[in-house]
Length: 167
Length: 384
Image 1 (tube, each protein chain N blue to C red):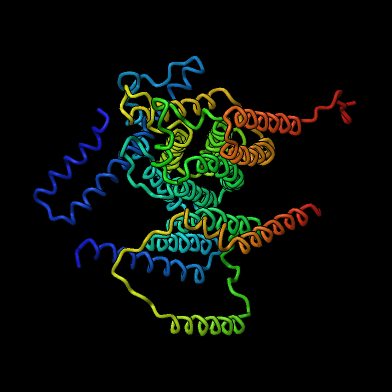
Image 2: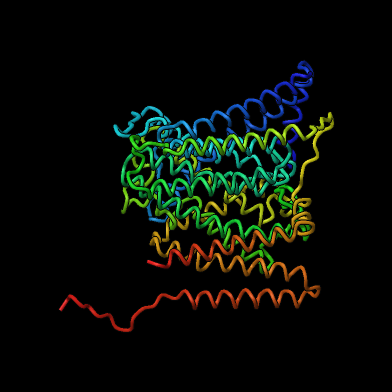
């Protein structure tokens, strides 16, 4: 293995480790604002993994939408919540039983998926998924789900305006 | 003259490859590009502060800094030393870790976006095939850093500034992204390098700004860009007369300087991206080297931003939001439609005519709809 490949591999594993670490931070931090920041860190790490897998467009959109918009929205929600950032507010509720059940079901599903898939390994470099390929797929083969998602988003937008008007 | 920087990098690499193994040469190549950006960014920032103070001074009939060095040229260095040696004050109730991280986190995206700017022919650090999207995505994360700084300071003025800043940045993100769409439509690529190359021709003056949709998109993009940098007249997040200094009220010393460094580097990169998208980037008349054209255009746009600061008063919050949502957003949407028609209509006269007519009509309609309702005669209920 050439030193360069080793360096790249170390970098990718480091990236994965850091995003997992940030993910642990999201659920363990006592302060909800810190949790939101750790979530931003996790999402950035995921974007980095996309980049490493040559899915450039997905990485860009991940940063633009999740880090740029969703985390900002979460922060806004925290700001508008009463008793801003009070560290004495408990971070967990009493629903840990159902949560554990949900988690176990998810783990079982994912585990069965992992076992069913045969993971092809190839030495050749990955071909990057370009915007052109994505666009052709979205407006060709998958045009119907694409339009349905657009309608759902439009409905959500109109719904938000209708709710906001009633004051 | 033109490939001087490219050739000097090649010469350096040749020198290193003589006595270093192959794999380190790749690393050295990366480090040269990173090093150039890491020097260029802060250096640009230092001299932009000088340029702004000099220019604002002239606009206000003053001379500006002229004590340190000839024309005050060493003033930025003196300021740097002052900032570095100042006491670093952290408020008692502040969230120490986040307070420290925020100014660091804001400089990183500002430096990262330099990597996709084509400074000249073959002078792009990374030719990403999603260059423009990368720029917009990475600069969108500055919202988060500003919010971190505002929240961690535990100060009402900081918090207000942070909330204003987030509201503003989120609003202006929309017209900014939408005004890029016609250009991407025309070039058929998201890569900044391809965008510049598709504007070649007509002796280097076939810029997108000379088409009706390009001109409209140029104006909307540039205005949103000024708002994204929190510059006057869109500087309500740090409005001095209202909320002390907004999100950086509680910062001093080098941390304060880092906020300013990010702001000035954003000014440069947003102007650079505007030049790349609409003014042909490094394309220009063949007399000057390509990088000179890029810097001339970028600094011309930076100059206009500072001119704005010298002449325009700050917008009110409702005016600011109104401009983004009621004027720029509908205009950019119509503009995308116009750009689509432009490539659909084959005859040149017809497509210019349709585009100008549609855009003119939209502009007139938006101006009419957005007119402030002023009552004929003011009545003062409580003054009698």
